[in-house]
Amino acid sequence: MVYTDEAILLIREQMKQTEKKSHSDEVIEEELKQSIYDEEVKIFRLPVKFTDMELLEGRITMRLPEDFTPRTQEEIARAFFLKDKPQYVYCNPYLDFALTMNWTGHQVSRDTLFEAARDVESVLDRVGPKTQFLGRHQLKREEGNLAICQLLANALDGVTYMAMFFASVEGRLLMGSLSFDQKLSKRLAPLADEIVKSLRIREE
View 1 (cartoon, rainbow, N blue to C red):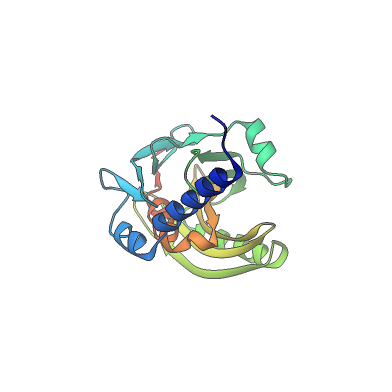
View 2 (tube, rainbow, N blue to C red):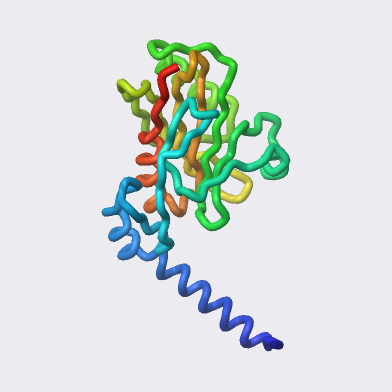
């Protein structure tokens, strides 16, 4: 089948209108009533099922879309040009966010986690890309303490929203984030917050 220029333009316009409808305030307000613990969640009208996924070779669990898969080291190297690229990346082809993690060699205990998280934030504020911190939370929990911060960071292609988290896993600092275009934050920021808080550290 041969498409004329007019037909191609019409298809593109229809695709734009479909995307616009899926990102409308009415759709987002309805979707915000859902939870990752529901049987199915709509994200910009796309049906997504979440499951408790084992990460770090079973050392932690986090509730993620069930079709999130780990990227290979070759894929990570192609996607991240910076020297400090993440060790782990999980995503799928159709959602606009990904999970990245680094299980560092920095020794940190449950009791010193919050101080370590503040130190990392201070470094990001000083030497990282221009950032704007939106909020910080410290959660003391039986299933492992968790430090969370939300921030906006300038990127080459716009402004990125990041939901960062810090935990102590086997005495080492785990740093991770869920990142996406700031324009999508009305829908994705509450979702990211719920995902981050689902992190559970298994007993050694």
